Image: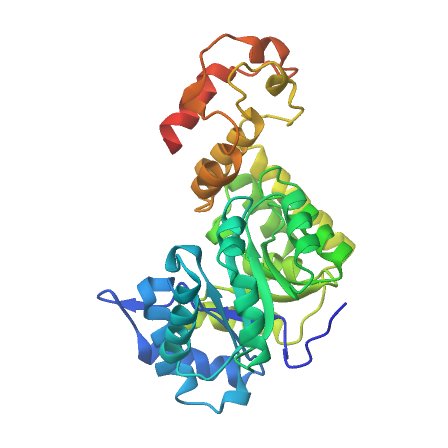
Length: 369
């Protein structure tokens, strides 16, 4: 397992949900947050070309790189597929990113939001080869990817691209065994390939802070704070290098610093607590699909019904902003959409849970199509 001694602590400042005033970044508050973060021994900052319509990179320049020596901080940026359509575009975008952030190199540079479809765009335009050239030139130090798909696809990508050093995945205690996100399975693939992980969405877009009543009672009775349990859970696995938190005010930052400054991995008892909370959340009127896939085998429209139900559960009950992307780029790729259902009823005959699948597929289509 590769070590990264320059990374001082396991909490990173995700610069995607910054405080805003009238549509612009509140740079004065961000400066205070950056100072507080660095003064407490943290040094990892994360951005991307499209975050806040490009304003995140500018905030990096105004609030961080123009105010601190370059060796004082670790900066990650990303190459996103919709910003390039040629090899020449990659060089141009990369230089634009350096200029916008006010730096001469990135510590980590990630191929952004890869899945089974997007990876081909990166490979066709030789994005990995360009990134390796940037590395040889000293303009990036470490090459990685951020990833949104199933564990088997991650395994394939890491097999084909051993040059990848780090992988950013969605990992939290709610998605730990989720059949769509597959947090645990994706982490196991990292371990298999000897890679380090970077965690995005450790609090599931805020859904692990604003818990439903039953889950909140379990957490309150334990004496733990929501963000503390979520972030420590995500940071605890041995191969996890970093957990990103999209802190949008100084109060959130101070709360995170309070338990991440002297980080302690979760105990077995705390792990069980997290799973009890996840089960309580899962009992809140969700589709009770067990993903046995008996319904898929006889479907004449080849609809991947369990994955579509997973997307609906994620969107409606956890306000997961990634659910729509999973629906479009994973669950319906090489499979039918919910609206393709011809209502033959074979799925309901095969379902051990006796779910009203045809009616539920109508809900899925209404939500995502």
